[in-house]
Length: 533
Image 1 (cartoon, helix red, strand yellow):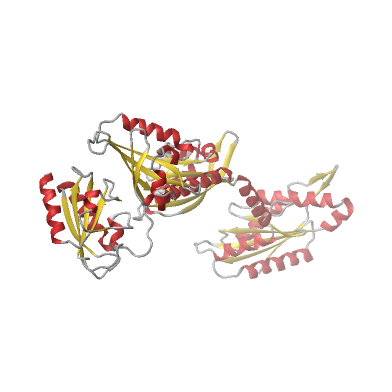
Image 2 (image 1 turned 30 degrees about the horizontal axis):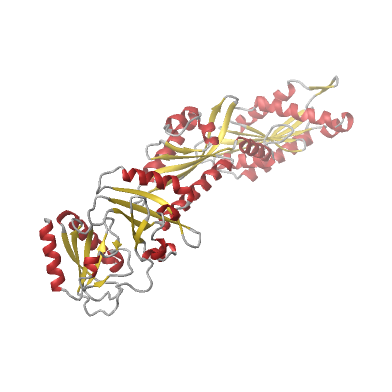
């Protein structure tokens, strides 16, 4: 639409709607002061809102934005809206481009002719924008009334002052550079800059200033500045920046490696501890770097955890070993998937903690809870557990044999040579039994001078007797030297056997114990063996 057609549209609109509201809209889409010509057109001025979006209910925002784009493309547009001041009423927003003559777009609200309010919005709406006119030397020649609400200064008091006087001292250099850049542009050009201005009470207010070079205007030469209050936006950015700094500083103090990867496994952030652990830096592919140091046996689990987190958003906690110059360390890895607003996985956070010492302590506690500290055999609780597992095993095996070994004369050895001698004899017996036990069998110390040997895959009573005889033969194989004194084991042995699934653990060990006491009672030599009935 050419300028003449736009002028015709404006004339027709004003004629059809003499009681409508009228406002001037800058190139940024925000309301600006009405040019004198429009102010004298007889229509009521739109006051209060920063933009046309502030005039209408939220459901109409898209219609207004679509109309704005049609205006920019065609020179004029209109749409049906529902004003916030009267949501049940249907009004119409007319937009006409008069930038060729007045430097602004015109907005007209019709259908509200009987509305008594001067403002079309509810309550007190603080303006977000003010237009300021300046000469070539950046001296303010005129300012909109909105400057009072924005900076606390009456418009008349800023006229004649340098615009730089209102700018925060820390932003003077940037303000001057932007102004000089504008002066070097052709008339009709514009430059945008973000600066802090000082409110009359001293606090800083952020503005985005769009300065339009109209120094070549023969009627009113100068620079028109559209100052948009962006304090909320800058405060939000500062909050985000402060939050990011807090998180980064926090990750540097935590005793673990923390890194972030994208959906392609590329590292987007990592703290120093993670860099040392993984041997990588931002931009590297985590999978290649990480798996290179992981123990081969643990690599499939680590790779699967990464793949599941990035493909399906499945969190994972796992432990793996990795090589370092001084040996193997254990790492606990916690993977947490990151998602976008649409739920799609965008990456993951990986926390890496060195748990080598924890693993060592855990294994030490497990060992203490399982093994006898003196002999290295299973302790009583672990022995009984092993027996229960043997008799309850679901796999098909011939049967289970229990060999109960009780040392004869052990108290006399302690009394004669001391407890160190007794301990030596116990460790000697345990070592001999472990050497002689068939494959898959276990040796446990029940306490004092009693040992129990558990064997699976024993086919019958005679097989069980042969197993026990082999253990006795091992004990006969030699004694332990204690300060030149040979300590020779003497033992009574009871054997019990049961086919798979025919006896409970308690029953089997009780039978072996009874057979051992029978052997002890009837023994005629240092070693005696009885097979339970």
